[in-house]
Image 1 (cartoon, rainbow, N blue to C red):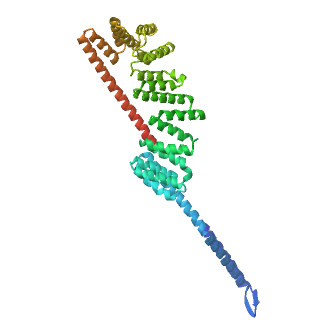
Image 2: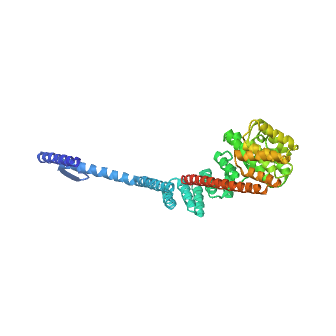
Length: 420
């Protein structure tokens, strides 16, 4: 419609100009250096208009040619940006959907078009690892660092995270140690180092890190305490494996007093101390703990340790019976302590009551051993069989629970791996 209006307007102007030209008799005479040019006024005006248009078009053309490199560069930039977004989006979606090969190929294709291809490299590295191509993974990570040296920490953390997920714990530790040397104040590096040291059971390193994390307030007090308990428990278990009682005692004494009161550490220490004949000190510790608070795990251990006075130990346990009459763990402990004091009748009564309250392989084993001493072999055999059947059932149930837990953790890990 607009084009039609322009044509009609041009025809109208041409008609007016033609009418004016046919009726006009004006002339223009130009003289220069002996030369004389004579023409009509209308033709001269038309010539001026044409000349003006030619000059205008020439100037515009020169300006366009002058700006062509910049305009081409901008067009190329826009094209690259579109392609970069296209391949990045396609690659990340494929990564989330679990199509590792497509994800790697798409992210790799987008690298030449991306202004900062860091995300492409990191995503391609993850996709390559998920295909088991660790050489390609390392190549992408190396390229990411070379392309953007300022992102050293980010690339290093990504490398460490991939190494940890691939069970390359030693390599991850080397990566994180280097990053920690470069940026000692970086929070994520510290947290990943904490996890790596924990996986490697380097408990003293864990405690050193926790001290710094506590001062910097990077973790809550509750989490710090839980991690400290885990580390000190690990040290106690490592000391127990040395078969050196002195090392175990020194490790226990090195634990802060406020943490030695924790039931969890007391239980770990007692279990390790039970490997040695001399564990009278544990009886005192367990007794002090039970005077302050009730715990079935501590009660069970109290029946295993040997105090300096076995009758006094039994008397203390029987005092607990007043408030915890029906507790099967306490009844088992009383049965064990009665056996130690050669009180066979009392021991049998306690053990039978413990089994009645809650059947337990340990109670069956203690009762069977007592019945053997009393010459009741058939009943002892029946107790052994019942205890073995119960232990097998419990073991099977625990195995199923562990399998379900492992499957849930694997599903969570798989979901986490799909996010760059």
